[in-house]
Length: 227
Length: 227
DNA sequence: GGCGTTATTATGTCTATACATAATGACCTG
DNA sequence: CAGGTCATTATGTATAGACATAATAACGCC
Image 1 (cartoon, protein in one colour):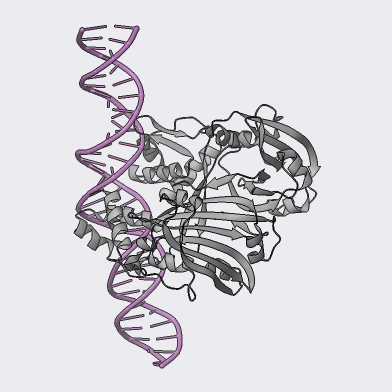
Image 2 (spheres, chains in turn purple, blue, green, orange):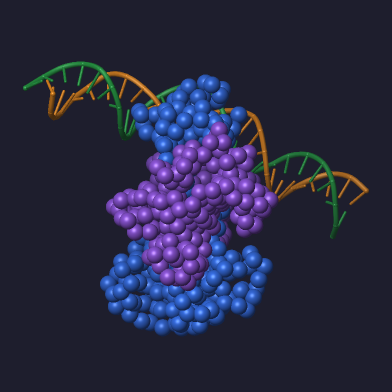
């Protein structure tokens, strides 16, 4: 029995309530003996279950079944082009605006910089099969970029360029539902006031804030967790 | 240097483009020698980075820096009561409807059962500080529950009861933005057509589908990733 | 009894070694 | 040259043993 086998058996016992919520389960040593494996193998299995939120582990106190397991859902944040192509539709994008501009307060707060700082403002429309798929508004901090060089984003969207050139950064993401403004509705080909799915993302490197992007998807868009 | 140290150093080299996207990085053995640790320690570090989507590993082929790293965002799916209380507001809920009913096609498709099967239909309003916080519509399969016993959900919401009693199940989650119907708007105290943030969740155990729930959050709600 | 100190203990991690597994690339054969 | 076979190789996993760490429980002191 490998560590996945141990994991599955422990999971089975949790689900079967052999070990009810809140109960302390046997120690790694005991389980290792029972399953006939090394303690390290049990450790790997229990760590995986703890990571998933089903077990709570504390040194000395032992391992217990989580009382209110926090289910962790994971989302794949992929490039919009990939997302569109995965639907079997041809991707295209149009840059609607690209200019240096002082950033407004809302964006400044999220990026943790003073309002009014000059950044590159980008407005982009992403198309799937020729129809509007997502509307993107972005502030980009040129000072945080390698070589401080910014391409025009005609050939490659900022989304994709950043992933390839400033990738491996950290960030926060928030999702919400909002009513489309007149301008947003026009870009997406919907009516003002229609509900839009909003993704807001802030990206930093260790040194500097990189970008704040606000992405709008029109009606019909669904964001799904990966299994 | 522990495995986290190795992970951080590898991450640093990726970000610094010492190892550019697509490049094959040295093998575990070589890195172990370089860092002066055991191969198992390097393995742990590289596995963590592969899990995060920054490295791609294949037996024999080696480890390479991901060309288009798929960033994985994780969400904590907590109990609504906890979510409300975390905001410092008192939680309450009201069961608006609870009756056996044949499930409609949309719910049947998502649960993978024939339409019209009789299930418990629940409509619940979750309140934060006395104001509507979320509107919940749920179909619950009594056959999948332990002892086939279903409480009334006056004292504890179905949300919380399920987590405690049928927990550790698997599920799919999808998010979208929709316009509130007249009935939904009335329940949430908003206007019909206002954008609502919709969470749809299907839950199974190994044996049977358990529940399909559609959760509506009014304007102002934001779903955030955990760091 | 209250409180600070110490011993104990379960998990966390590292090591060295070994074998398993998958996939590549070279080799061989028709 | 096409196609199949096999050796090679990097990762995947298991092992026993050891020490580190954190947190509880026991102890002793006042």
